[in-house]
Amino acid sequence: MSGGGKVVCVTGASGFIASWLVKLLLQRGYTVKASVRDPNDPKKTEHLLSLDGAKERLHLLKANLLEEGSFDSLVEGCEGVFHTASPVIISPSDPEAEVIDPAVKGTLNVLRSCVKFPSVKRVVVTSSVVSLTINGKPLTPDVVVDETWFSDPAVCEELKVGRVSVCNFYGTYCVMLLQATSCGGYSSTMLLNWYALSKTLAEDITWKFAKENKIDVVTMHPGFTIGPFLQSTLNVAAEIVLNHINGSQTLANMVYRFVDVRDVAYAHIQAFEVASASGRYILVGTVMNNVGTSKILEELYPDLSLPERWEKEKPPLPIYHVSNEKAKGLGIDFISLEVSLRDSVECFKEKGFLIM
Image (cartoon, rainbow, N blue to C red):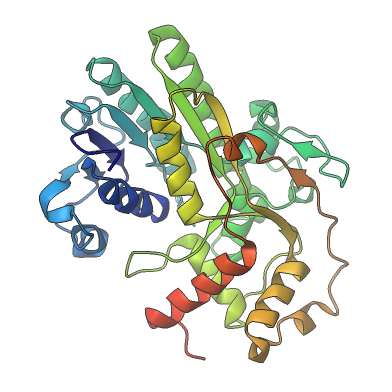
């Protein structure tokens, strides 16, 4: 086991990606210190405490993104730090306080804790593909998005006040968040702004802090993350897919940058374990528009008859390219979209969210 005897920590451990990260770390023999907002909330912790190896090697701690020093006890004694905690809030009443501050100030607080302890060898930060693509460049079929792309905070600021059309930024994660809650009081532009801006600013401050304090940081940039979930409750991404399957909400007419949650978790571990890992890593397995996604689901589950829902809608958007070559260099063999969608549906059925 590659992690035998090593101690690492995971922030935001009850989340969709982080839960799988904790599971895989335990499987590899690591001792895992994991932060959650409320260790006494069974909905946030039961699925973690039931993991193989959790009784012996999982330690849950309470931490607050906005409280400086809150992560000191979590980071102390760790070789690796996985910072996944960042808010994904559907209808924030105060986006600045609920989305931007926890993402940016929270990241700084975690990094400040890291520099206090010489045991820390590398910090792996979960960012997002939206910190690459919100820059005004058109996403056309001849485009290849790679790690050299950066979102422009100025463009995000324009989005924040609604001066830029969401349609210019096909398939971003935030647009899909809004698609599931279009009646929640925020326009699709507004949700895109806050999430994209939070991720862009948080990544920017990460690299500045790393350079100034000479710490080894790697950032991971997953797309729309799907696949089976370990929690007993639906996460936002799972809810979007489920709503499409059960007919309550169709997928938006845009291009989606899919990745399986198991690949995302594994890539985080590889980013820590592979000594040569550095910089940014895009984690996108398949780029697909709404119609193509719907057709895959119908082939897997013919009774769903999903494609007919698109007959009267606008033509599907053209698919562009997102490079995952750098991630493949970490040994990531991306799970196919067909398998991810199938396993998502089977998870819905197993947990009682879908009856077919």
